Length: 144
Image (cartoon, rainbow, N blue to C red; front, side, top):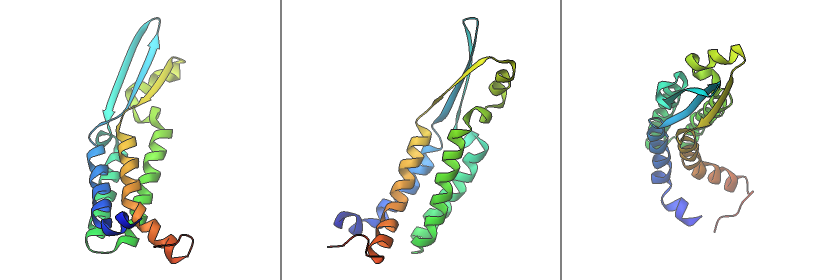
């Protein structure tokens, strides 16, 4: 707990940087199989439409943290988390060229890349010190 308090700025900014880095890795790979043949498509998160929303929210979070408005950055990090979760649930539809095959009853599979997990870890790092402060103020957890 003491480590988090001493390095809170670096932890939160590192979380925002991790979100930004995670945008450039593969988000998901969608495959369609038919009679032993397979067609697949993969995209980085920044290539998805919602990746640009995550990019903007990560930059806003970093700026709010830098200018000591950390509590407001909690809003943008929660928005980032919600966008990533929604994108993971709706991953097949993010790949328009492959998802059209599922309309014909072909088997489609989705395998997530490393990008959504990096972004989620970044969100946790960006929000963790703020959440700890709020819990200490509400006396839910004790500080030493």
